[in-house]
Length: 361
Image (cartoon, rainbow, N blue to C red; front, side, top):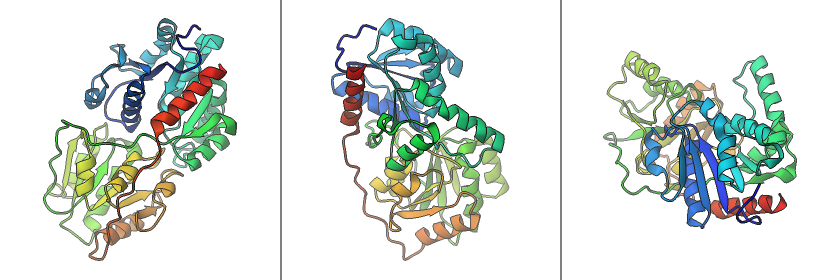
């Protein structure tokens, strides 16, 4: 395949289904902005631009909108690759690896290098034995269609090597670019008094029901909960709030354009997921000095919450542990952590990897 600059990843193509507020898509847009600022050309093939993250599409990107938010619409990706002739394809997360596989199958040797990022746990204890077996078999196919895998922490890289069977030489550790305050974002209305905060999609994976169940059991019966995000579990969560009589303590305003100010004002940031990749909200909370309480939803959680002064990590099903951890951080003697700075230059690290792969191709 002809490339304008054969020795560098001058032209990067990435893709997404829709922009409803997921962390995978938000990180992808953040990276795309960095690649554009570094002088690269970036094409985004997008099923539908509907959703709150549309405001974060960076200026200067080549946007191909398919007008169809279904996952299957992205199966047209090979024809756009043939037309646009990118130097490299970036798969932004596990959810999209099926499209990467189909693209490699269709293009064969004419495919540019494909780099996939690990965005979710590769070991899923919540799955049934049959579903877990099928998931493992699917992961083992990834070395056939991904040239390289990016994990966000060393533990996630080790998990990719073990579960995918990906050779270590084809796995790199690169963090997501750190979150930054978004100019012009609509401010979030904060609860009066102290509040807990959860940031993430309202989907079963996130298990916000655990946090709602814990709320009436806390020693502080005045503390409120601000839950930022949107998704298909909203009706079930609203019904739970009503059943528990928490209507005056729980606020769910939907997606937040910039959650950092709300994270900074919270007493504790909470994550109750069954599974995650490298949960960005934990890093974002710690970057503004807010302690965290999280389920052990990923091997990366303890890499982020690596010291007791930063927060508490509990087992997924430890309801008593969740209440105890929240009571601790809401207690009078709790000390907020110092803000944790994020080092490195993920944008430059990605581009160095991309350039190397294109050069080798």
